Amino acid sequence: MSQPVERNAADALAVYDPVWDRMRTEAQEMAQSEPALASFLHVTVLNHRHFNSSLAYHLAQKLGNVEVRAMQLREIFDDVLKSAPEIGEAARVDIVAYYERDPACHSYVQPLLFFKGYHALQAYRIAHWLWTNGRRPMALYLQNRISDLFAVDIHPAAKIGRGVFIDHATGIVIGETAVVGDDVSMLHAVTLGGTGKESGDRHPKVHRGVLISVGAKVLGNIQIGEYSRIGAGSVVLHDVPPHCTAVGVPAKIVGCAGCDKPSHEMDHIIDEGGSGAGI
Image 1: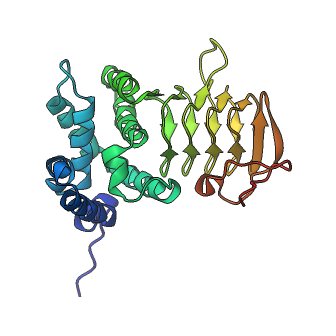
Image 2: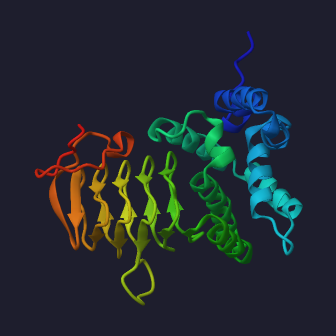
Image 3: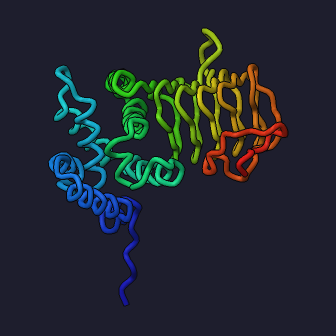
């Protein structure tokens, strides 16, 4: 009796990719309902057999310019995604995060087509691979293009997990030694920065499931514990324990996080006891 063939994640996704299948179906429906977008939808989604091909094409079209053409970038992106299939896997997980957490996201295909936070995050993922594989000038070039186009500045050396949701995205800054764990959500104008001219490990470590609200500034080599919340406009200079809420300038701990998974609930309202008013 023959033994079952073991497949890695990349092989499995080449055979059955439910996220990509759903995206193609949604793109077909969108092309039928909005004929003016049919050509765009075909070249971006429907003409591609695999998700990674679509992602590489779309990012290259956005980031290419007269100095480095889209065709050159697409070749680089295709090679990176083939060498590191985990990037495409993370990009799929991010799509699901956008769909589940953003009430303005009504389909899986929307983030790929229209959301600049998603574009910036996936372009960062490619830049990060280039940075860690000895291609730092190209990684920095992509960082600059991402900043110019999307108003999102993520250093390619930063480490970002999967299932990350960056809503609206304008004004996001993530420094060189920052770490962002899985399932984190953050809104526009968030900074994960340093506190001065110090070198070395100088940026925040944001653990799993954290929610960082609009305009929060998290500064220095500090720990933001898992499933905690940072309130809008807060300036965080010290560690935040897990499952807590920190608000204010400077931020202080005002209570619990209000729920088990703040980054999924997306509740930014904090009552006097520190809990989420909407929970």
